[in-house]
Length: 227
Image 1 (spheres, rainbow, N blue to C red):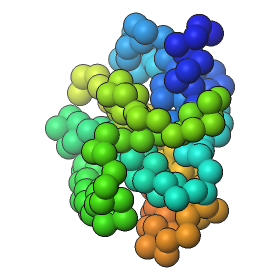
Image 2: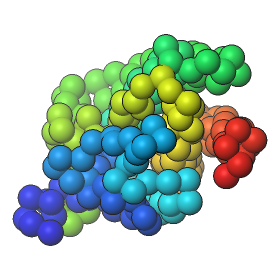
Image 3: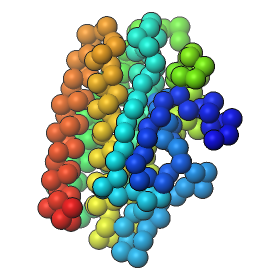
Image 4: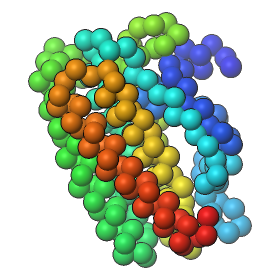
């Protein structure tokens, strides 16, 4: 690991068999190689540098201590994470042929847009003097720092899911399941650290709704692809 990677590796997301290098997620880092792309194998299935449904992802996520700026960093982490889900859900609406998956994607867009708007409103109310630049926690240096545009983009965990072929829906499930797991992990962290009842309530809602959606996606994956 070079110095650049160390300086922007606040929180590690350890990726079992994912050969992705590292992607920063809300100050949570998932290494990705500089030239990483979503490749498709001969069956048209997405290959995230070796990602498959059996891959294990240890979402060891933390946006820092329960200090006065904890909620600021949480919001600055969860908003782009939600935005990444919107990108992938919109792609489902455009490319999937399964009515149940399209309905599912539309629900993600509706609910997460509401949550994004709510969090953005809280940010203005709770941190009226804060810079518009998103913030993150640097664990090695043990301080808060501005999030770069590159890190904000990588926090979205969004990606092109490829062409509208027979493997598209599976690629979506393979991407959205760990994406939802990341949101659940962040929300669980908020329940432990935030003192704001509004954010506690939102976190509980995220955990309940996204865990339910994870279960549904796993069921579809088993039903449609047998694994």
